[in-house]
Amino acid sequence: MEPARTLPLSRDIWGTQGGDLTSICATAQLMATVRDADGVEMPTAAVTWSSSNTAVATVGEGGTVEAVGEGSTTITAQSGDATGNAQVTVVLPAPTPAEVVVEPDTATLTEVGATVQLSATVLDATGAEIGATAELAATVLDADGVEIEGAVVVWTTSDAEVAVVDQEGVVTAVGEGVATITAAIGEVSGTAEVTVEL
Image 1: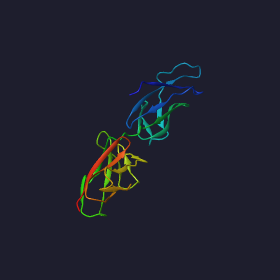
Image 2 (image 1 turned 30 degrees about the horizontal axis):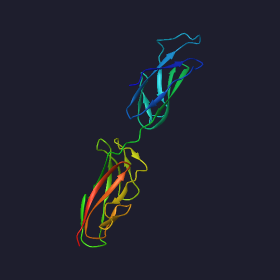
Image 3 (image 1 turned 90 degrees about the horizontal axis):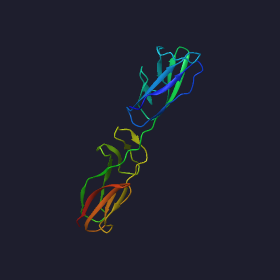
Image 4 (image 1 turned 120 degrees about the vertical axis):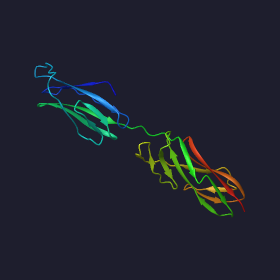
């Protein structure tokens, strides 16, 4: 939990403070200081809290803000006719691919021109799926199951005289032997061994 922040309230609404949250269920504590028209603090004044966008963050009776989804929301504290606002932004870091799983991980082709379809699944460090592709349109999920746009694996072959692979993961036999097919995203990759037996 982040340190408590003071959110001044007065009839003229003084300055406000907010902040960023960087993970779902992360919390931040907002504090409201209620003052009268002369600027004298009113410690026993009741304060009501609300969020303008509960799909981004909710706020409890005591001013505890909890992240729900990415975006921005305005947290409002109200005491009588006085209100104060704090802008809270939820910014989620992009997941880091940790592993690429290629399926099937072995295949045998028995004639030149025969093909086999491979698929790749990208996993994060927890083993949760953050992406999958058999074509260049990938559905990428982070560890929380939230879709991430734009993850594309690159297919390569270790021996184009044995088998070639296109960017949809379709492997085509060329000549007898064994080739390793690799699917990579950034520094992370997975492989499948393809055997061509003529």
